[in-house]
Image (cartoon, rainbow, N blue to C red; front, side, top):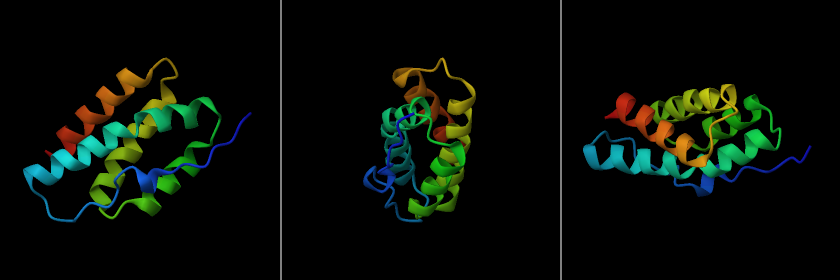
Length: 99
């Protein structure tokens, strides 16, 4: 089982805390962009709690961290999701929660 070091901080988690339509779009785009790395973590056997911990540690906005954490849990529960489906699911969940 290969372990990876997640670079979620590099996936644009430096959002401002202001809630605006532009900010929501930026947050959701960043979360969507994290899909390939999250799929790799899942497929490489990185424990869910480790991934969630890194998401929580690197997000500067609690609401966005919670949304991505919930999406990551769903991604781990459904091993059949590929990158494209995961990205779409993550984006939809983010927009529904923050939009």
